[in-house]
Length: 592
Image (cartoon, rainbow, N blue to C red; front, side, top):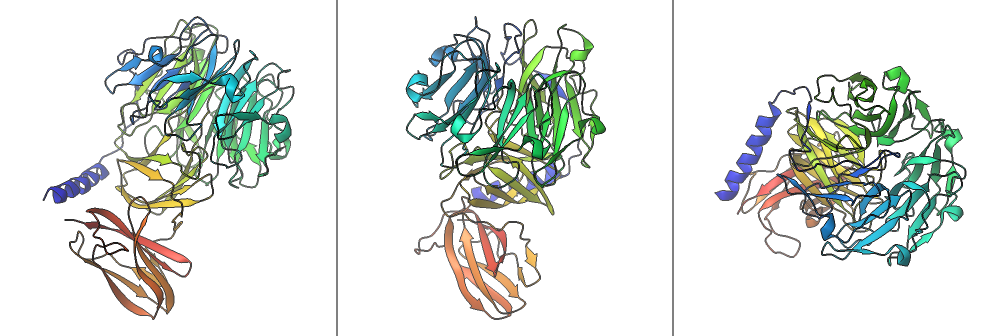
């Protein structure tokens, strides 16, 4: 009876949340209440913030860059408060820190640490597994000669399963660096050979993304001083091609931040770029290798001095909204108020008012997205400079449902950076992508929060891994965290619906069941049929049918045993049928 009660609670909860009515989104700054009382010591282009779970306990932590006279701020999330634990780590600060990146560079299951600096040398720290960090910068082959480094990002550009590192240098004479991860805690600097030095520019923002959906991570740079932004297309052979002009992404900005996401839900990645008072840019991906800049026509140019920018679904309605950090030389000036835009779901935006942020005139630089209290609504962390303090904007929720996706690579890099995720429900589909280094000098949580409106069930989540495989999870209840481990033999059905004109897969009966259940399907014509049972990790448990069957109704009995005749445990299972090149799947519950 214990198992039955738990399952009834899950379904009743899903039903009740489906009846909630969405409310207008609002935020509340809880930084001081949560123990985050600090500021970036001086302006000098400010710094970034990471909203990443650095200790692996499942809760998003916060890391803020620091001025040269300060220690870094490593705020560990205790759920009720944050505690600065930098003195327990061995991580030091000997210069103005800029980009903060937590990444598992050696795929050992814990986060390592990289920080860029504009006065002192960049630093790479290895996590020894006990949350002690060892400075391996020189031994790893990372240059630490005090160049004017600012933006940095990590991604697997050669798809070998290890995260590489791209570091920009903002001086016009120092060249950008691409560090290829050799998989043995050494890196080889290959920017010149790869063609990504970007000579003579003043970069302030950078991110890996796969803009053309070919499975290879490209690089986009936001450059200062009207010198033109740069898009490097990955050729898939270790080299890149500068396609800035051909793609119409070479906008001449004082660029400072990059947001990446599919704001118009047309299944490709768009970019929003911050700028000065001359106006930010929205680069809409045309799906043919080119982009169109349309920010002004949509009323989201802002026309103030902007820095960190973020696509964020603030109300969990599945559409990506937009948050923009604004700065100004004079604190308290109304021109410094950060901007928040709501996506109307039709490719347009509306400026949001009465969100709790309208009187915020802090000096904002980097910003990042995460969910510090685990309630399924995306919160915003902002690094502010003296005299204003760091902010943590708690999302008060909208009543809409959500699902959180936690990816773990095996063939791909363990952090699953560079993955493309498809979410299917109620005949809808949206995509999300994973990045390590985005916005302005910042890093979002690597657990993806997806808003689902009133939906109570997700039909499927499809993960397209950097290594090239696909994994699918089916029929998932909302308002939960789903951990997806990359399988060695990926299983997927793409967009296949539950009923297809050549066959029909029916609900199993009884369901829940013990000790056996009947799986019925109808064939319109004779066809080759594959019928399998999978667990929620995507592992095949039992093949029930693998032969050509005649037209008509067919019933197969599953006795709850695996391929070796061993009884499986209680839980949720997926049965999937493949008929020719089409497939469908349903869920069933085994109770013991």
